[in-house]
Amino acid sequence: MLGNRDSHTARAFVKDLKSRLTNRVQLTTDGLKYYFHAVAEYFSDDVDYAMLRKIYGGTLDESGPSVRYSPAKCLGCERKAMIGRPDPEHISTSFVERQNLSVRMNIRRYTRLTNAFSRKIENHSAAVALYYFSYHFVKIHRTLRCTPAMAAGVTNRLWEVSDLVALLEADERALERAA
Image (cartoon, rainbow, N blue to C red):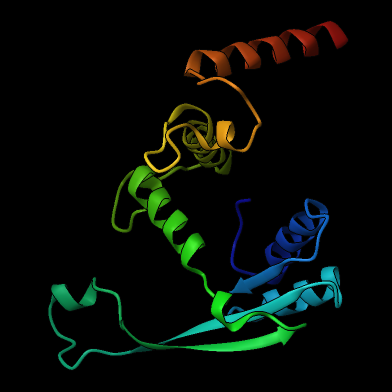
């Protein structure tokens, strides 16, 4: 889901997440306050929810470009149970942080100080969708020894970009016939 870090996007994201789950889960978010309200609204008490807030500090010497473009130093993390009884050993945002790193490394649009940006949200959305298609259906992951879609049982074969093009063309033909 693409969107800003605001209440509207947090609510839409958590609503979509809830619609995809059938069992009680443990959920951890960062310190964005909008997540708490969204989780409380859509999950009620049917979740073990914790918030992990990173505590950042400034640098001693704040002059020069090497400091200006560097992230602040993380001094520690504050873990807080918000709803239910989350297991303290599983309060972590590591999986999503790793996913964010993969996205930034593979989609130049998410890298700071680059000219690889989209002027239209539709183009940005298409670039992100292509990346996720490739990540889940085309790329064999070293730890899985197959694609994530194959590991999840969504497909039984390795896809190619031409398979996606064929699906899009078939969808366009169906729309033309319906019109």
